[in-house]
Length: 289
Picture 1 (tube, rainbow, N blue to C red):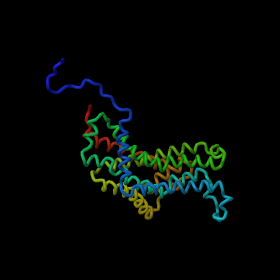
Picture 2: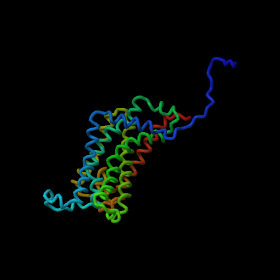
Picture 3: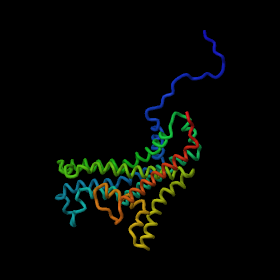
Picture 4: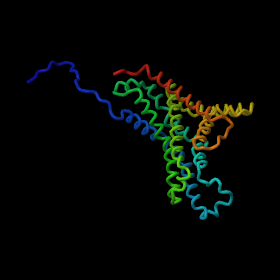
């Protein structure tokens, strides 16, 4: 019988990383968000525009049954790229997305900084990129529900209600536009939320920043445009920049007489700046295996 000396025994096994090491972070973030007071109500409200637009698609295929309700022009029921663009770049939808970010994004990193949880994260077989992916995936989960999924449902229901593939044959690129813009706006808001969440330890302070900066950018535009009447001041507005790029993705005319490239560069610049700040904020606490 082997007798071992009492003391510390080294582990000789092989440490293997999980296939999706970021998933527990994402799952916890999603569950925590749903437990927050009033979130379910506000999240339900974000789906109202999708329901309204879906009803519009149904009515567009049954106009003869709704003549008693529709007495004016039916141009707004023309289901085409303009219809999709009006949904994705709608001010109300963007407003509700920001509200969702207040609940889902404010505490993603700020809570970890507040409770010194980063050391615990990186003491496990978890890489920095997995940490960021796990946090960003929380935002992706909620925003895809109000962007990508409704857009795909619109296309499918249009084909079902019409009973033909004529719509798809007329706009075969539309599904790519839906996917591209959904990824674009979701990626921006993910970087935007994580960046603001990383600069403070107080979740409420971060929530105010997420909400305030978005609308303050619009106020700055309104003030300067009212004074100088130059459309280039629209570049100060995050909302307008998203709308400008969205119009191009859906092959529509931009609302403002400013090149959409400037808006795209501003959005990309914000994402790059956010990534650099996030990398710097986390660098000092990462533990190398």
